[in-house]
Length: 100
Image 1: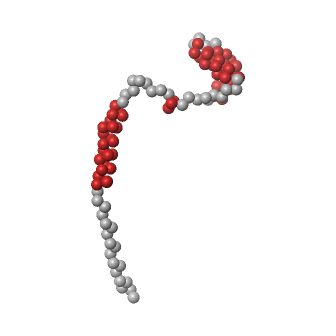
Image 2: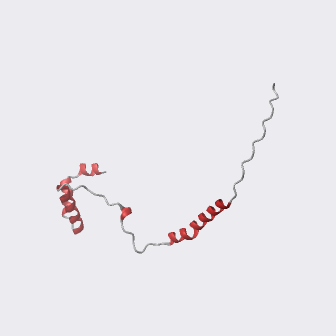
Image 3: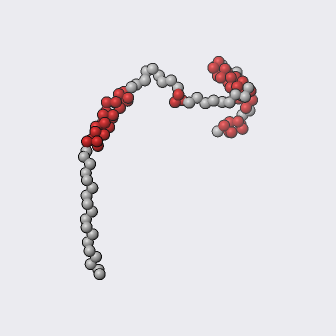
C-alpha cells in the first residue's frame, strides 16, 4: 500500500501537506519525526503492553478468578493429595506354551 501511495504521489508534497496541517499536533509530530531522523535518532515504537491502565479498570474478571477458579483448583489439589496410593497389581503368570 505504501508503495502505491508513494508511486502515485510526490513524497515531498505529502510531507508538505502534513507540515502545513491545520492540526498543531500533526505538525509538531511530523516536525519532531523529521528532526529526529536528521539527527540520526532511530524510530522507537511504544509497547502498548507497558502503557498505564485506566483508573476505571473493571475488576470483575479478577474477582471471578479469585472466587470461582482458584478455589476449584485448590479443591482438586487437595483431592489428589488425599488420595491413597495403591500398590501395583502383580502381573498374571504366563500360560505354558501348548505348541511344543
